[in-house]
Structure formats: C-alpha cells, structure tokens
Length: 327
Image 1 (cartoon, rainbow, N blue to C red):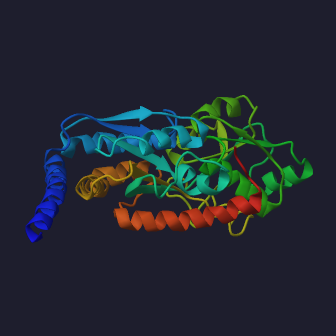
Image 2: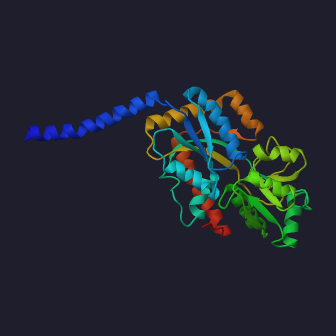
Image 3: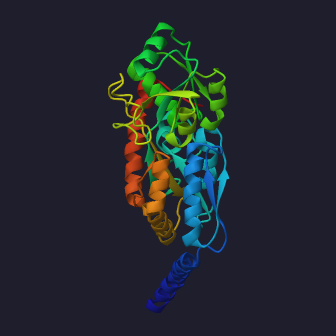
C-alpha cells in the first residue's frame, strides 16, 4: 500500500516538474518571435507616442522587434480586453493608462475585465501632468476667466476627451466638480482626433499631456491655461498649476503602465520588468521623456500592483462625487 501511494504521488509530481522546467526553458529562450505591444488608444496620442519610445528601446535587449498595435475604442477597453484574453506567453503586452485601469472600475457598471485580477502587472512606466487648453476662439486667457465664462453661460462650453471614462474625461469632471461649473462632455476615440475640432472652434476645451499638446501650444493654435499637478511642468514653465490658478485641490496627473495577460510566469514577468526598468533609467530615454513632459518611474511589479489599488480607490471617490457613469 505504501508503495502504491508513493507511485501515485510520483505520477502527480512529474507533470508539475515538467511544467516548471518548461517554464524555465521558455523564459531562457524568450522571445523567439516579435512581441506585440497593444496600445488601447489611437496613433499620435500620448499613450501611443510613449509606447513607441519604449517599444523601440525594448526591441534591443529582447533581440526581437516589439511591434506597436493600436486597438482604440470604448475608452481603452477594447485594447485592454485583447490583452486580458491573450495567452500568458509574453508575446502580447499592454501599454495603457490611468483611464483603463484606475478610473474604469468605478465608472462602468459592467466591464469585460478586472483591472487587478485579469492582468499581470509589469511596471509603471512614467507619469505626466495634463494640460488644460482652450480653443483660440474661447474668450478666456486664464483658469479664473474660464470658470467665470462657464458660470455665466452654464452648459454653453464643451470639452473633448479620448473617450468616456478616460483620464481626460475625468479631468474635466473633476474641474466641473471643484469649480462648480457646468460643461458638456464630448467623447472621441483619442485626443488626437479632438484637435481638428478645437482648431475649427467646435470644441471649447481639452485636457491632454505635453507629449501631444506642446506643438499646438507653441504654434498658438490652442491656449494653455493650467497644468494638473502639484508643481509646474518643466516643459511649460510659464503655465501655472490649475490649483494655484483658481481651483484649490485640483490634482490629476496621468500615469502610464505596462501589463501582460493574467498568469504570466514569474520569470517572464521579471524579465520584462528588468529590461523595461533598465531602458527607462538610461540617460537618453530619460531625456527623451523629459522632452515629452514625462518622468520615468520603473516601479517593480509588486509596487505597481499596490499603487494601482490606491489609484482605483482615489478615482472611485472622484467618479462618485461627479456622478459620471458609462455603459
């Protein structure tokens, strides 16, 4: 009987041992083909530009091309779900933002994925302030003047965003809440698609990151009134924070993260984290991000997961207070 039990235990243990060895071998040989980096927003937007910087640099140590694949729509939900449903083999990764993983959980009544359960955290890539801009035909040159205009004509002003539930949508909702104003939200599939309507005067206001906004601000095609964080942006030193410009307590910086499908092996998770962290700390990458108005973070997978939990709780309060909802 003792020998029989021993045989059963061995039979059960062998497959486990084989799986463990296979995982190790896979991690050592990975990757043997190009890696697909899903971006949940359109080309030319903030997430896309940052992802392409990372993809180009990450291709070098992986010795395989990292191909950016834009899958926009539904506030980033479509692209994110593609990754949550993908095989956990390291060949599909996601670069997305606060919008899809921190704001979405409390904004949507039904979502096709859980931000924590259905992804493997790799790292927080970078953080960036957002910039409050108005169209050139809006008669306001400061945050206080914009608020006064909105109060004088409730509902007359509108603001575009990269979709319902995105960071830029909730940035506008937070401004409405704290300033006590009424504006109409107009969702798009990405902020890059909002600018033409701003130039023509159809959209009054937009929140975006310096990565995308700087060329238009410098060309005078839009007016920058304030930045979202607790300090001025290095690339926009003459633009005050929204908090200092008339809305105390306003803080809505945007962060970018990298995820893989759930149940990615620890070895592959660590490999992707280590290579990404190394490239983010390289002087040329730091300078490139600084030129785009972003700061590298490179947090560990564990720290990123903890940070995400805190962010979900933070934005849940904003969503509830604003009454914003999405179907």
